[in-house]
Image 1 (spheres, one colour):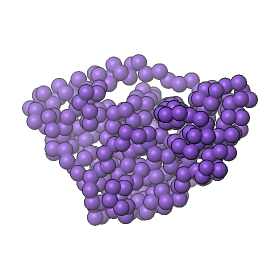
Image 2 (spheres, rainbow, N blue to C red):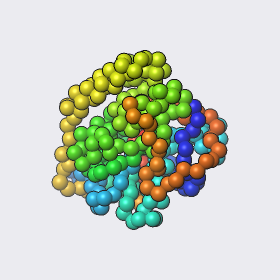
Image 3 (cartoon, rainbow, N blue to C red):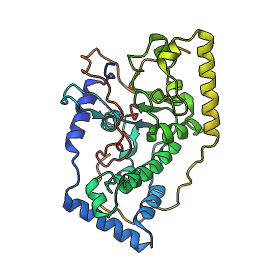
Image 4 (cartoon, rainbow, N blue to C red):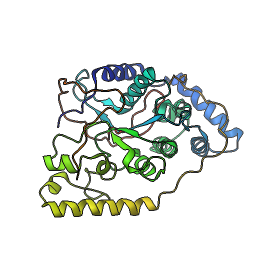
Length: 336
């Protein structure tokens, strides 16, 4: 499977963002943990209770009603990285938003760059040094990070308006993109299924009929293609081997299953005020039909470039990578 197309300028900018992002030092982790514990004590909560409530209070409402929101998951290969290394789609989403905002200020955003995303990112919840300083044992730190970022991700998706862009080829089952953001976007009356657009084309390794019919934005915003034992699974090879009538039936069942699942989606009611002062960390920075051609949404005309060697990185079991003030699971807009 070839690497997804990424415009050269966006790729360079994303690599720079990746290189500039460093883990918290032990000293920084200690300061962050002290501020979190002090804030939690002040309101009579445990650290997990405080962090989860803070995720419900932080501001992710678009300042511009016409802003385009980006989503991401997992990572993609890049020719400038060593073998076995990949570029998180978070950096690509950030680079895309920066580029768009340079052309038209306020026209694009990504979760970690919102006011609320920067505040939660400053807690460095994916950082093991912070886990140690907070006395979180085993998977408690990862679980707290995923819970807080899942809450903020859902609120971000529920606040989105109009067309959104997903930096991922597909949504891997169990990621924040697949379990939280896409259901919230599909049921968001200001977005809906028709406004979910993937920045990357479907995987080249799929049979042609699967790329054409399963590779549409609408199908990829509903199905998962990786784990047969998980809900909403469609196998591209098996699908392509079926006659047309049976393929139509598969898509019909998928839509019905998604509608049933979405009917139970519960929106998060944001708390009315933000939690106490920023706890610290690093300083917040500035912020079927024929398969569609990925447009990189605003302003990109794809140019032929040498494809990166290797295949798209397999999803990892560990939590999504932390980035410049980041934290949620890794490719999708998550390009996955």
